[in-house]
Length: 85
Image (cartoon, rainbow, N blue to C red):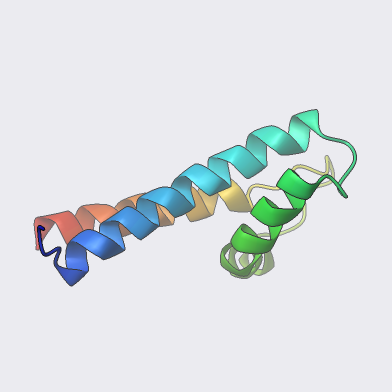
């Protein structure tokens, strides 16, 4: 059995979080019933990460939420920093 380092585990968790954020963004266009169990689970897992970015961004008049994009980019930069160390 291969012993993974803390950095490897953190990279994997951040990668899975990026996938969940992408899934939430795509599902928000397709699912209009927010009581859907799949959307509910993804929403519960990603909301703690998206809400700080949502508070930083000004609200748009078009109703588009840019917090998933900003959060995704932040996680991507964080992963690049971890990989370079």
